[in-house]
Amino acid sequence: MIVFAPIIIPLLFIILSLSLNKASNAAQRIVFMAGNIITIGVGVTILATVLSEGMIVAQAGAWEAPYGITLVADTFSGIMLTLTSLTVGVVSLYSLAWKEDNLNTSVFYALIFGLQMGMNGAFVAGDLFNLYVWFEVMLISSFVLISYGSGKVQLKGTLKYVTMNLVSSFFFVAGIAVLYGEVGTLNMADLAYRVREMGSELNIFAPSALILMGFAVKSAIFPFYFWLPDSYHTPPLPVSALFSGTLTKVGVYSMIRFFSLIHVEGDVFYNQLFLFVASATMISGVLMATSQFEVRRLLSFHIVSQIGYMILGLGLFTKLALTGAVFYIIGHCVVKTNLFLLSGIGYKYTGTFDLKKSGGLIKKSPFVAILFFISAMALVGIPPLSGFFGKFMLIKAGIESKEFIHVASALAVSFLTLFSMIKIWNEAYAKDLPQSVLENGFKWGRPSNQLIVSSVILVVVTLGLTVGSKFIIDVCSTAADQLLDIDGYVKTVLKK
Image 1: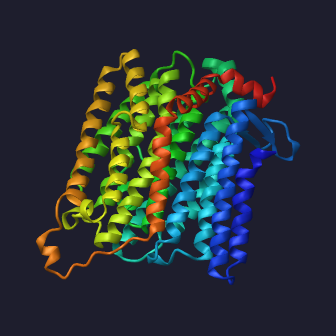
Image 2: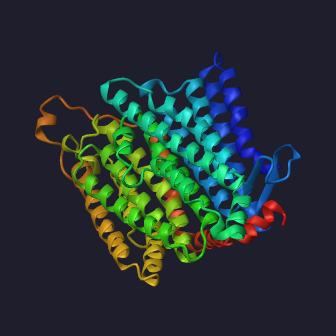
Image 3: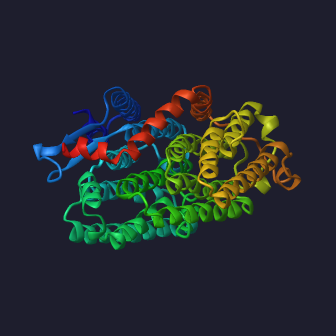
């Protein structure tokens, strides 16, 4: 069935990429981009299928759920498969023109497909153990990718990234073990069924808390976010861009998937916990971002801050809030990836990521300045750009739920995000290059057209989300309906 394709296709291209190790560089690049295009096509096909025909369920080896390996694709899965494959495809195109760091090798291409296979597997996993397995597949590739390069800062960032993700995996697998001992199943549909059937007889607070710890570290939410800004600015720019747009979203997806299934009406503990964590994540991330002058590090703290908006939707747990959260994930993935790509284009011009040593980009390339302005304002949520719709739905849902403190936090963070984007604009684009830089024999660099084209693609997608916002919101609303329809999920997977 097609639900296996998001896993099988990247696996085949891992093998193909490594088998072409001694082939010409042109042949390797063609295979690399062909694999990305096919994977995008698979994601779009699955999304179109679930929108027209409903949820897709497949059982590996013909073992019926909950005894076998179950793969499930609904609208939320289809959105994430399409979104991440598109992001990986654009960053892959960008990486081909990134001459530094020796990225254009068959091993690098295989690692990208390995990362994609792990993410895709997580999006269609129907049980917790296989979700854990796909997390580890994704992390193995990411461990190697983040270590590309050299230097003390790179080593420090890599060690933090690897250590914290290993710790999160420990909590995750420990939670899975305790949960299996308590409930006797790891199939998420069967788990949701038993939670509702047994009610208070079934105490899963301890294992769900351990699993939450695992998701919290992987998603970089408060107070476990410190590793992300210390790590994401250290690898080669294309790797940073790829991680910024995709990896934390896998953790957020898994958190929404798991806790929406075990959510029992009337149990408000996790709702309040998520609301507190959301506000704390938004505020702490944006406050740290405002003090940064290394543009990649500044953008990394904003990843943390924006994750808080997504968790806010889970905490509110209404149809409007979940619709806003899913829409926000889409917009943030595209925009944040592009902001990293644009920081790389700025680096090609000026030779630095330090905002204090940058400047003059609006005069050197007004077109690149426009690309940055659109992406930055979309991140802030300035209407009518795509970021506005996600924030508007979340804030409206918060007001309807009378969670005014968290609404105020979200609004305040938006203003501080605007401050940070204006800071990048003023330092890198609007002001002239510092005299001290000019006196040291500065010469303008020139990014290749392929780098700029990659950014243009993501800006076009951002504008497409704006123009087609009604359709996208309808799709996200369908995803929210399915997340709230636990009985429908259980009946489709377990056939009961």
